[in-house]
Every structure is written in C-alpha cells, then in structure tokens.
Image (cartoon, rainbow, N blue to C red):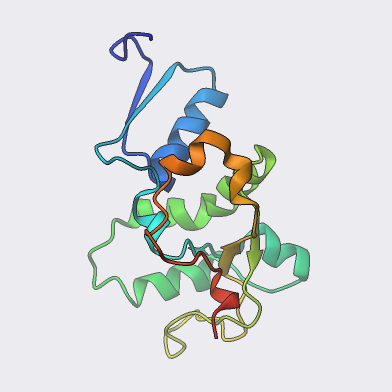
Length: 167
C-alpha cells in the first residue's frame, strides 16, 4: 500500500463530486488519493435518485431543445435568495455541459434526458416546461461492478429504480 500522504491531490469524500474531482485530477496526470469516512461510497447521489440537472447540456443540444445561459442564470437567480456566489453559479452554467461531456468520454456515466420532466418551478423566469435539463443515469448491470458492488451505498433493501420507472 502506498503512503496516502504522498499524493498530489487529496479528495475527501467519495460521492459524485469527490469521485468526479478524482477522475479529473487523475486524467490530468496527478497522483490522487480518495478518502471516505463512511463504510460505503456514493454520498448524497447514492440516496437522492441520482438525477442531474444541467442547463444547455449535450443531450439537449443533440435533441434540438433550446436553452441558453441567460435563461439558466435567470432561473437560478430567481431561486437563490442572493445566497449563491455569482462566480460559482456562472461557472456551473458555463461549464456543466463540458463536465458532462468529459464524464461521458471517460465512460464514467451515461445520462439521458428525462423526457417531459420540467424544471421544478415553472413560474420562474428561464424555466423550461417541456424538460431537457433533468438527466437520469442509464440502467446497467450492477454485477459488472465486481467487488466494488458491495462498496457502494445501495439503500439497504430498497429496490434500485430510475425515476422514469416509478409509477
């Protein structure tokens, strides 16, 4: 085992954000160490249903669904009560699509538009009623994870389902 203190990048937390940061740092040539306080990986994404909300994402572009930076920012700003950093918000809107493309290229995930799944607050400026910003992971054979399958938080006896499979 290597000394975890001998690392270029230390990631604390093995949820979606931490593992994305680890993959990105690794792809840039860094020696990466990930530590997790829990017994299982996955963080909040493992128990939240895993829906990803990204404006003007690659899947929207491929399907010809219109979206733009101004609408996405207007939607966010109508909900943030002035609590979000403008720089962080703009970076998310500007780079979210690129982040998804990177993760897709790495084979880290496969997301699909939840057809007809609207933004939550349709009365807000910039909202999209017909959907496109909400993305869900594709189904996959959990057994392909091998020994890692037992290391991922799975909700105990909860049956794994995608949102579009629910009644």
